[in-house]
Length: 119
Ligand SMILES: [Zn+2]
Image (cartoon, rainbow, N blue to C red):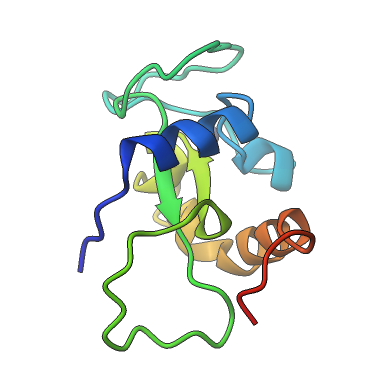
């Protein structure tokens, strides 16, 4: 099930995450970031949205939230910026996003502890 992310939501999340893949920030062993072509983008700094070939939105549901009949567009509280390599790529047979869902969740929870009233 693919949920549509509004352009304004993407813009907000990218700015919040400083236009950087958050994997190396959350995991010292995350390895190099890669673009959608598989090229390493280590050290690349973006100052605006470079497009989905370079930075993508990873959607993570809050702990315990069931995906029943929710038709709402993902909000920034559920989204984090990842490069294509860490989002969908595999390194040594494992996908960073899939392995680190709990890390991402905790990070998003700490970001959104103030100012949200979803619970
Ligand atoms: Zn990355």
